[in-house]
Length: 397
Ligand code: ATP
Ligand code: MG
Image (cartoon, rainbow, N blue to C red):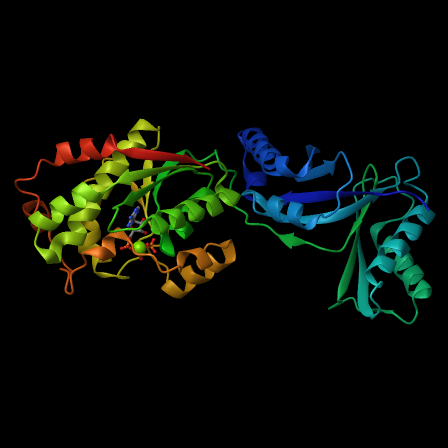
């Protein structure tokens, strides 16, 4: 028997299309993978020919959590656990046959049978066999070794044995889809307005998938919103770090502003007035932290405060662009994404949100800018914003 080492092969997508900046994107990606894998031990990570090779330096008992971590790093299109062997004896076809048999045996451990094919690639052109020859000869050898368990199906096989001939030999059968996108840190920084709902975590995920580094802000109105509501948002922010990396959550004490607005504004304009205050405060946090955009989970028409007219009244108070990556998505699709990224179960925990505490039965659905400005008459907006900015709790995740 020849020894093999189990390693991870990860593939990049969009980054490969980058021209002169490609190196910068790749370095950032490798740094992000390194940081994400710190909890699992030590790894050598190398980039060669549009692929990333992740080699553990010690024994790994369970590859699954590592694969999950690698595939959730933005910039990775897919990853495979791979057997790597043949250093020094690569050109000896017997080595490949022996390891392929051992590999199949492992997959037949629990009995059963499956259809299969061999799919090989050869970047080492001096190898004694061509790729089609490897496919045929290795396929025949496996079939001969496991006549009762294997049958060939080149069109829709249950099992594809991938073989790559490079500096060494590589075999694998699984290709796990990644979250694609661009490495976090290559797309500037933005402030995510993170509520406890389903939408805003998904919005943060989407912008992070374009390489944006996130700061998050949550407006907490104790005792109208409970400590459990706050814990829920902290939990959501923590879940986002699986994709967005390190994250700072700014928890703004919103109680005074909320009470001031409740006493000052007509009920049907209250949500809009609160939203405008949130935007102003978030924009100041952005400025203090070098962020160039705000991000919300709004989707056109989803609720009264998300009509085009309403969105216009909140947009104008932000001096920086407001990104709403869910703007054209259906609630069903957003919910599906929330499930996929793992935030859904937390989002549906039944704690109140500050926007639903004093909610009007019939909010104005088509407020004009003049309406929105009129309800703020007599308020010292700058002073309200300033007082909120001195009462912020920071949580580092
Ligand atoms: P979500 O599911 O994200 O809570 P939603 O459909 O409930 O969104 P709204 O409550 O109208 O919609 O909020 C719209 C957006 O405003 C949210 O997606 C979020 O970005 C921001 N937002 C609302 N409330 C808060 C809050 N308490 N703290 C931070 N951001 C908030
Ligand atoms: Mg909400």
